[in-house]
Amino acid sequence: MSRIFSGIQPSGELHIGNYLGAVKNWAELQRSYESFFCIVDYHAITIPYEPEDLRVRTREMMVSLLAAGLDPSRSTIFVQSMVPEHTELAWIFNSVTPLGELERQTQYKDKASRMESVPAGILNYPILQAADILLYRADLVPVGEDQVQHLELSREIARRWNARFGDGFFPEPQAKLTPARRIMGLDGNAKMSKSMGNTVGLLEPPESIWEKLRPAVTDPARVRRTDPGTPEVCNIYQLHRGFSTPETVEHVAAQCRSAGWGCIDCKKTLAASIETELVPIRRRASELAERPSDVEDALASGATRCRRIARETIDAVRERMGF
Ligand code: SF4
Image (tube, rainbow, N blue to C red):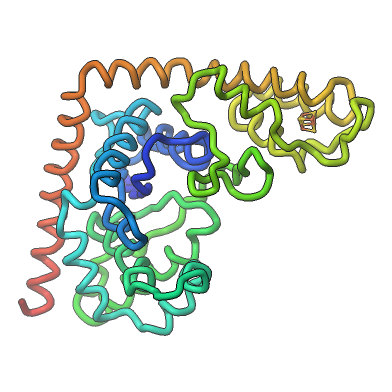
C-alpha cells in the first residue's frame, strides 16, 4: 500500500476552507493509503506566537481533525514536535540543499517581502517540510497547487542526499493534487484564512454561520434579483460544490444563470447543505469534549508509531553518513 504524508498548521479549530481544501480529502484517502497526518507545530514557530496559545491551538486542531473524520484506527495522526527526528533530519538536509533553491521559493519571497527582519526558519521552512515527508519515506503528498514548488524541492533534496549517501534510499515523493478548489473568504477578497478574519468555523453553530453567509460577496454582476449571474465566479457556488449534492449544484448553476432565484435563496440552500455535513462533525466534537482521554490516546499512539518509523530512518541515515 502506498504511503501518504500531509501536514497542517496548528491554527486551532478547522474552518470550512481548510476542511474542503484538505481534510475532507484526507478522510477519503485514509481508506486507500497508509496515511500520516501531522500537525506541524515546529513550522508554526517561524512567526511570532504565544506558547500557551500554541498549546491550545494544537489541541483544538487535533479535536477538529478527529471530528472531521480522521480515524486513528486507519491513519496515524500526530504532532510534529512529539517526534524530534523531524528536526534532526532537517539539519542533515541543510547540508545538501543549495541556498539559491531556497531563495527562489515563491512563498519565501512573498513572506520575506512583508518582514522587516526575516528569521532563518522562514528560509529553511521547505527543508523541514522535506524532512517531514522523507522521514516516513512517503510516496505521495496530497497538496494544493500552491505547495507544488515546495514538493519539487523535497524531491530535489531526496535526489541530492541519495546521490551522495544512499542510492534510492529516499523515494522521490510525488504530488497528489487535492481535487478541492481554492475557497475564498466570505468577504471575497482573499483565500479563507484565520489571519484574514474571513472564515467559517467547522464547529460554529448554524445561526452564526448564517450571520456570515447572508452578507457574503456573490457575483458582482448580479446587482438586481433579475440579473442573470455566472456561478463560476461566485464563491457561494464554490461552497455549493464542496457541500451540496451534484443535483443541487446543477440546480444552483441553472437558477443562477437564468436569474430563477435570488442570492439569498441560493445561500439558504447552501446553509442547509452545510448543516447536513456539519451535524455529525459537531456531534463527534462534543463526544470528544466529554472524553478528552480519546484525544490524548490518539496523540500518544500516533507519536509512538511515528517515533519508531522515524528512528529507523534516522538510524539508517546516520549509518550511511558516518556518524
Ligand atoms: S445565485 Fe448563487 S451562485 Fe449565483 S451569484 Fe447568487 S449566490 Fe452566487
